[in-house]
Length: 115
Figure 1 (cartoon, one colour):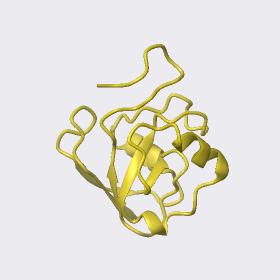
Figure 2 (tube, rainbow, N blue to C red):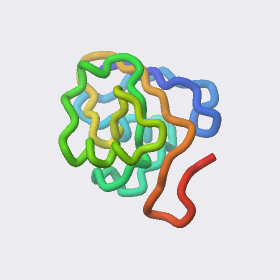
Figure 3 (tube, helix red, strand yellow):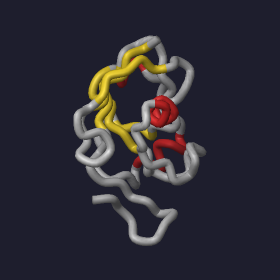
């Protein structure tokens, strides 16, 4: 199993988390299995940006993003060069350090953003 470290997030994971992830599954799926309720408005179908994460360590070990993901990431709040949609980033053998941004843009429901 591959270790994922989640940096503290004031609402979703105040103390941060460290856990063994299931390789071959998405970062989003793995977070949800740990009761880290990252928003995923499109049910992990790569149709929104609500599961945006910043991969602080291990980014280069992930498979490259596809064009659909890149187009959506352009709309994400707090976009960084090592940003990914967690529903599309598949965990491999390399440990990951993940930061969940403070805000998210949810174009699916009225009133975008979580504070």
